[in-house]
Length: 476
Image (cartoon, rainbow, N blue to C red; front, top):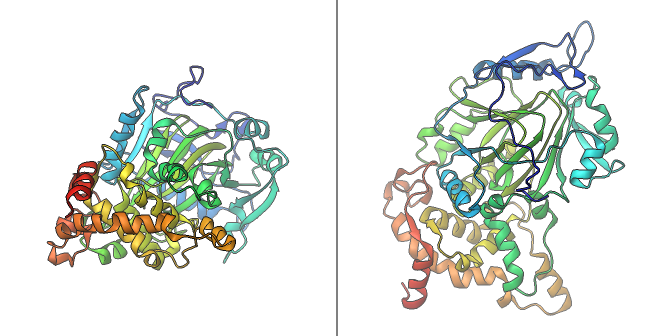
């Protein structure tokens, strides 16, 4: 789909006050289910509910209690939630404005982008995403998840069966990270994705390259499909990825969470203490955490910097598309979260084993970044992740192209991105950045907290093209 189709409907400018989502199209939710009104917009939704026994009337009582607590505690505004209105035209400039906010660890909500609605029916899913009705899919099941010490929470079924269960109030499920063959990211989103650019450009500069690891490709674009009344508990996205999501039908209450003490961290141990106040899958709330509700309706796009803690309630059947990406403007957050997740993986979701290869390509192809203003902190983060891969991943997987050439007996490491990144750029960037960061003796040279910029400031900015030209011409 072309993202600026003139026939695309316009999203809601605002949510109608008093919107009642206890009835959605032909779906009427159970009369025994409790409802809540969300603050700021007065939306009424049904809480998670599946009828049980006289002893346990609601099988999803824990989910219901959690979501009810959310509705009582969320706020609707924060300085680190930035709303923008989409303006067609200069996508590069629009992407630049978003990068500025991501660099400050701000979540961006984009209103007014044209979209193609995708109702949750098997035929619409096929037409929009190329996923056939007979395709086998694996869904996450809220009822199975609710069982004590649940281990198996997934159900195999066809796409047709999943969609047919939308109006069955005895089933509450979701499909995560489905492949998306037909719909492509909007142009300004592509402009944000420096990892994708490096992957695509690499085949022109490293002619041996043939393979793109599946986990990388699938992370860049996916589909989310949820039954109504499904709650996704608090987590942040794995591998230090930034994330974008666009709602195509339905509605989500997207809750961004900042734990107590997060605004005042001064070192990595502060980060650990702050994040460990948040327990995944728990209805025990840190009373000092800040929770901001984003009421996302069709057309809305949410863009999160790396490590953004969030949980999502989907009150009605909803289809969304999204993707993960790496941006040179917030790699300091990528590094921080990858470092944390290696020791404390409980708050992140899927693993992405080949991301090291993507970071290597980003570093090797930095000379192509013409006209970019890059922060020293982000450059140092990239150097650190490339030079010390086992600090961030237990198993660093080999480059599949290198493995093929070794088997064929044609391997020459001088043509590989890893060698180029090390030889051409690592020393340059280190000389450009380490001297500046080492002045901060109280932080033992930890660039993340250089000059106490913390987690909402990428610090000193350099004109990367000019700096690179200076080093290549004259040396340090």
